[in-house]
Image 1 (cartoon, rainbow, N blue to C red):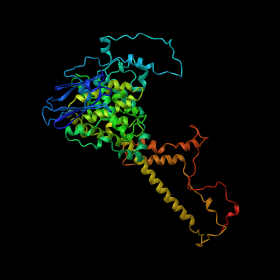
Image 2 (cartoon, helix red, strand yellow):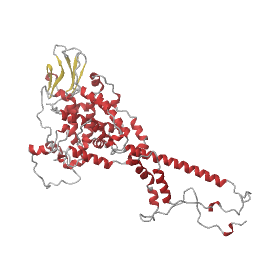
Image 3 (cartoon, rainbow, N blue to C red):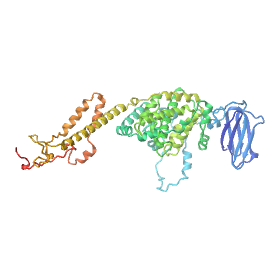
Length: 548
């Protein structure tokens, strides 16, 4: 039997079902209506729905069929006029029979399906080696599975990456997820983030923020939603035909989660949506080939199989990863993503479901990322349809009230910004003082010279040229000592900033080091005269002076 494409809508008195059943006959239609059960059969199509409210068959029902479009429309009266049926957009839940519980294993073997589809694609690049050595796969016992670490949606998976070692490095950053505990994952993640942090990249985005300002002005589609009640929530969010088709393909499952598992599921959902919000804003709503990588990399759940214990842990992890990995590394993008995620949760579970379907599509179009759909996203798309809207809204309120500061990331961002600001301020002061000294020197050169008797001799040929006037030049060591003394004498510079200032100010420029080809580590370069003066090393002629 084929499940037809269908939609449900309602008004105060009627429930309307629209189903596409092409290539059928009107004489073959069969309907069954009983309370919350609705069954429709038109060979080869079969549709069984469990409705959130009761309907009746009292003679007011009406059915029409458009032969050209293959569209069957049925209007059924509600048992209680004016009753609002909630969750008509949650198609996966509606397709499940009443009281049904899934007895299927949460990890399914897709090898048969994959092998069946492999024959349709021919490899022309090189011939497959049919003599490759193989080993018979054996199922692990319950004792062996109990020793493996848990991951995936609500920590319900294990043993998945044991058979997917080749795709492992392209999907997650964790090397051995089967034998790595949650505490070891967190330590490894923090160490990797600290190693990947680049102060140069962060400061470049901080001070050259024209592109960042443009991204902050972008308004995603969920910011335009105005939701105050559950009825407005369902009317505000609409699903495309492709999204509805994907919902029909999902297999409905029942998740029996304890309190700890439910908490981990909610926190991981926040973590994934934060990464999605950043990706949408950084691409201005236009997904690219880098979108799967960005979402995976910014989510500790997807890249390190992380399990969080509090909402603050989720925000700190997201802020650290934004500061270390993507193209745009600015703290304002972190706060804007948090606001976007809070808006999504406050708009209801329909808005959350639409975002998860979009993530599912992004991963589905990327070859290695399909594993993350099987581990997380598909289960979230099914699970979120059955949760209460009140819990989704309360999580959005908690996310809106949460506060994240730069010091919480433990990357010394405040100290780094203070040191960079001091360096820029001193460079501006030194440049202004240099320009003033240049103007003073130019005034001295233009003023007339006087003799011992007080007479002016500005055009006398007997006066020595100004280019051979004795000029005092300080060595490079003296200049560096003076600079270090200025840094140490700063009253407002904290102790942890001085080292950063010295690294930013006193390190030699790459252009200067490359220009001095004869200098080496053991022979420092010769001190050069200041750039604002021209020095001649030749002695003046003996007859250039007249003794008076």
